[in-house]
Amino acid sequence: MTPAHEKLRALWLSREREYCERLAAFVVPASGAECDPEQLRAWLRESLPHYMIPELICTLAELPLNAAGKLDRSALRLPGQPIAASQPLRAPSTPAEQTIAALIAQVLGACPDSIDHDFFADLGGHSLAATRLATLIRRAWPIAFPLRVVFENPTVAAMAAYVDQACADSPADTAIPRLPRRTASDP
Image 1 (cartoon, rainbow, N blue to C red):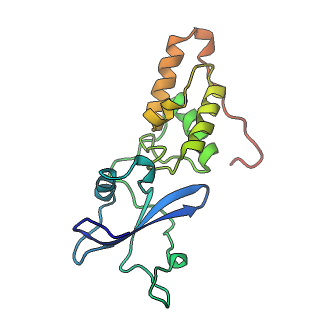
Image 2 (image 1 turned 30 degrees about the horizontal axis):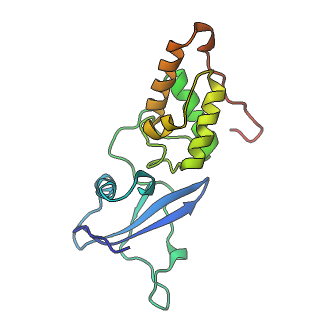
Image 3 (image 1 turned 120 degrees about the horizontal axis):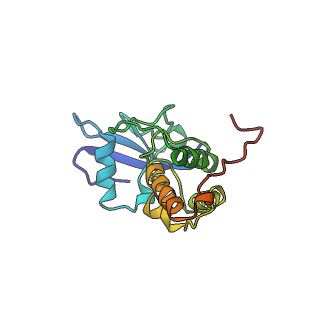
């Protein structure tokens, strides 16, 4: 992918598979320029839909090439951790936030670091994972939880606020969440 950004010399988007499919960007900054992950994501949001914004951004000196001079995709390796976000991380604190974070971990295979991370852009969620999450939330609380809530409120904090409000609007005896069932493979 040839960038149209003055601070980039090359940009490659790739799908990485660890727990689930995630989008990663491999970036070669222009001479003397630095790559700020948040600025890059903001620039990409101007022309791409939210589900195409990379979760992981890895800065490289050069894109690896094979003997034919073409991009060597197999040589693109991500470091162990994604580049840290510029915002402070907020851990789940309320019962609703904790339960939704656990459900997201069940769906995506990894727990979100912050209640402010976007299910799609930051965590690598997709429409099928969103459908599964909405189903699990409906099982955890006896409330109406349409799939569109995940798309319109894609953070743990926003989904928990929706659940708390829906529980407050429903009879008092239905406001207690059911925790997800633990299996032998759970930590």
